[in-house]
Length: 308
Image (spheres, rainbow, N blue to C red):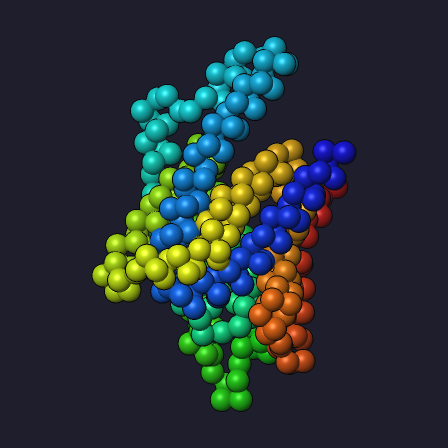
C-alpha cells in the first residue's frame, strides 16, 4: 500500500514540474526571467519553513510511537557547528547552481516551445552519469547508447534546415548541464544534512542571486508582479515547495531507479501541458526527436544487472 502511495506521489511531483513549464512561459508575459525566478524562489523558501516544522513533528511522532527516543533526537535540526556549516555550504552551492540553471531555462523558454524545453531539460538524466566520469565513476555501456540516442533526438527536436541550434534551445541545453551539476551537488551533500532544510536555504540563496540583478536589469513593478500572480504562485508554492517536499516524502524507502524514471515523466507532462494549455504543437520530426530523447532517458534509468 505504501509503495502505491509513493508511486502516486512521485507521479504527482512529475506532473507538477511538467506543468510548471507552462507557468514559467506564461509568467514571462508580465515579468522578466530574473524577476520571475526571484519571486518563485523566495515564495518556495518561505513555504518550506512550515513544512520543515511539520516534517519534524511527524518524525518525532513516529519515533515516540516506536519508542525509539534516540531516533527522535537524531531527527532534530543539526546542533553541532560542523553540521550547521555543512548545511549552509550545501545550501549555498545548491542555490548558486539552481539559480544559474533556472535563469538559463527561463531565458530559453522565452525563445522556444514549452514541450521542447521540457525534453531538452530532461537530458540532465543522461548528462549526470557522463559528468560522473570526472568523479572516477565509469559509465556502463548502456549509458553511451543513451547518449547517442539523446543526441539523435536532440538533432530532430532542435535542428533547423540551417543545421543550427536556436538561441533558446542552446540556453535550455546549458540549463540541463547546470541542473546536472546541481544534482551532483545534492548527491554529495544530501547524505550529510537534512534535505528539506538544505532546499529551503538553496531557494533563499537563489532568490537573492536572481533578485539583485532583477532590480538592476529589469526594474520590476508591483503591478507586473500582481498581473503574474498565478504563474508565480504555481512555480513558487507547487513547483518549488510542494513538489520538492513530495519528492522527499515519496522517495523514503523507495527504489531510487524507479523513482527517477517516474520523475523523468516531467518531460512528457510538459509537452502535454504545452499542447492543452498553450496550444503549442510539435511537428512529426520534433515528436520523433522527443521519442528518441525519452527512450534515452528510460535506458539510462535501467538497473545494472548484478553479477552472479
